[in-house]
Image 1: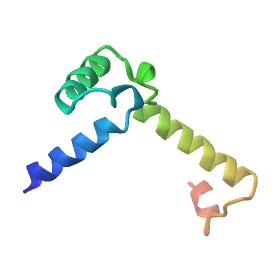
Image 2 (image 1 turned 30 degrees about the vertical axis):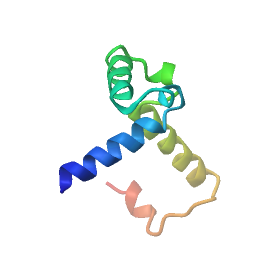
Image 3 (image 1 turned 30 degrees about the horizontal axis):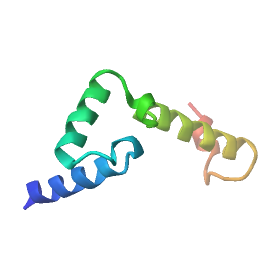
Length: 80
């Protein structure tokens, strides 16, 4: 059951990449593996997980510094 679900998710995910939509599912898998192995994430228009996490962290810091988001008991974070 889990492998069927994983298959469906993978099939749907490969279809989300605009440059791969024109291919059949087996071809999408082949193309995506080639692009990823060759660091083709940028070529596919996909940011890396590292870059997405960094962007999210920068957004959170901005919200905290500008007062758009508050931390309850934030003073505890600064104590050693």
